[in-house]
Length: 383
Image (cartoon, rainbow, N blue to C red; front, top):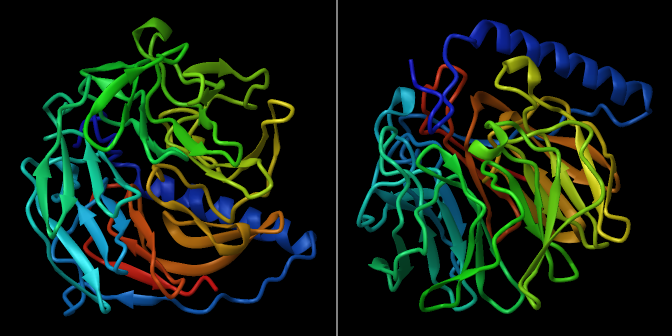
């Protein structure tokens, strides 16, 4: 059985969890029907089959997928064996509908972050070298078809967030170092890392997004030893111009972690899914809308199924839409509600998604409730 640290693998819950998912999906479908929403079946996704020529070269979960300026997608790291006991330093590149070998990382890592920089490079930071090792304090930069070393982080961290700011810098916030959550934050300025103001409280497995006003919203997460490892129902705003964190007055309806946040063009943010306890029955199909003008949360649209472990599975689309992958399908949020975009053939926890040049969504990897890692991928038309 995979331990709950650090990959949060959940084993031996397949039957119960799948039953909960089915029941919640049926309930969500009934809600949509009663609300008068369209029940038309979504167009089938393009499934990249296991064993086919275009399948990923390696099964992986808790990895990253980053679009490159030339239209390719760079996949980095991840756990690569069932149970998530093995970590990979391999990368691969998706181009022309196929996966090919990419350059190796200097070290294996998963639950790291990968951020596209304004100059076309990709910053890969932190993460776990293995399930039993502490977080890494190293970073690497993909440029010119290879990875090169970067200046070390100011603190080792994994399960953190990385947010590119308006000025091109990248904010790394929170995460874990050892078994304790971090309150520290740092920015990468293109050449190195510099510590910035610490958050008011330590947190990991939270969500973060750059708002339209240039501030960074951090939501939920899991507290450190000072909180007795409790889950958080608070949110923070970081102002990079003043290097100041502020706790927002509003609270989430319940503490949650392993969620995701996406900024909306109107200035608000969509808080997606998560989990309120380490229990399959505590996974959320609900969403929240955060309004920075009021500092409060209101209920958002409900998804068709619960989704968690989606830190790299929620992306913004043109027109103010948001695509949400993970679980057993893909949904798109637009005009205040979700519509189905694809039904998946496998369950995906900790998958990674990227938007392709034509607007389609590439969904890669992940593992199921028995931490069985998949090499399959989806190409989903979300137009």
